[in-house]
Structure formats: structure tokens, C-alpha cells
View 1 (tube, rainbow, N blue to C red):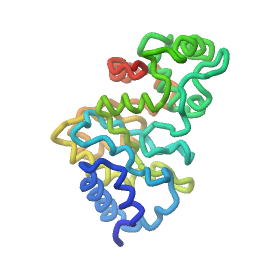
View 2: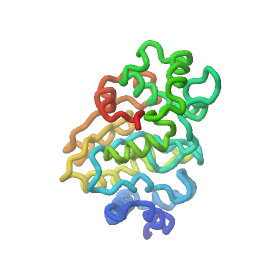
View 3: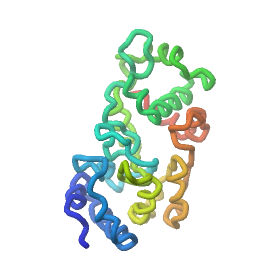
View 4: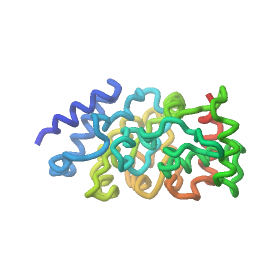
Length: 252
């Protein structure tokens, strides 16, 4: 069967430099699992955001960050790894509040924020609770030079050359992420092959993303691996501190 029209239309959200590569990736998926697209009718992200991460032009990619899969909520799943569409402000507006309620609901994002704060020396590794975060929020909320929204962090990622992907680009309530990730592997293989000459650093979060190491295209790239951010241990991961501290993602 041809690639379904709703997937072809979603390619319009990608930068023009990516569209031939992504189309080839879809064809590779179809060749590997011919019946897969027939089942792909009800999934997240919605609103043609499936390839939104590829708004980053190919020649600007310096890092490829690969997580697990989209958030399991329609508002949250944006097509960009880790960027929760339900999150606007980062800091709580409530007296004594730390991170905003929306950040706290997104466990991975909450732990990522804590990791950045530990890396910056603003949060002690053994004291990342509500009281410590309330102090930081009071020092950060509305302060010039301090990032206030998740959109600002996403732009910082973009400016640093990140391509923010997931091992599976879709979430379906009836299918385990690991199973969908297997179907999307030929697609990611095509993406990584297209980036081979510029040698971006591959940042792998979690066991599903680490399955990409089976691919020669992944093995050919420099890599940094970590547990998925929904694990508390991610907060004190020294490899993540070394990677993200120089980027100053919480400063604007």
C-alpha cells in the first residue's frame, strides 16, 4: 500500500531539508513491516505534529536526543521529545510553590528541571524537595535572565542544535511503546544515516532508546547514554550534568 495521506501531509511540518529523508524513512518502515501503517489510524501526537521535531534544519543538527515516546495525553504530545504542550510557565505562582503544577505532572520534565538545577549548583543533590525548589522559584519567577517558560527551553535546545526525537514517534493506548519503537527503527535508521557526515552526538535516554545501538548508523556516532528522566537517578547523572551545564538552558 502507498504511504497514507495523513502521514504525507504531516511532512509539511518538517523543514524542507528533511522531507526527502523522512519520506524515505517511511518507505523503509513499510518495506520492513508492510501492515504497520494500516493499523496507524488513532495515535498521538494529533494535529499533524508527527514530524514537528524536524523543524530543525538538517545542517544545524549537532545533537540527536532520543527518548522513549510521546506523552500519553493529547495536549502534551507535541511531536517534540520531552516538550510537554500542557506546560507553559516553569515556576509556581503560589506562595511557597516550587515548579509549576504542569511541570510536576510531567515526571520526566520535573526530573530534567531538577537535574539542570543540580548541575548549575543551585539545588543540592540530596535536597531536591518542595522547600528547596520553593526557594529557587522565589529567586527565579519573573527575574530577567532566567527562563520562565518551557517554550524558552525548547528554543534553547533548538539554538544549541538539538533534534528532539523519540524511539517511537507515536503513542497508542493499545500498543506498548517498545513494540511501536521496533516498527519505527528503520525510520530512525534512515534519519541517522542522513546525518552521518556531520557526526552529531547521539543522546540516548532509557532502555528503549538504547535499542538503537543495534544499528550501524548509531554505532558510527559519538554517544552519551542515560537512564530515562522518569527515573529519580537521572537528577544526579554526572554525564547529563557535563552535557547540559555549559548550555545554560535555564538562562536567557
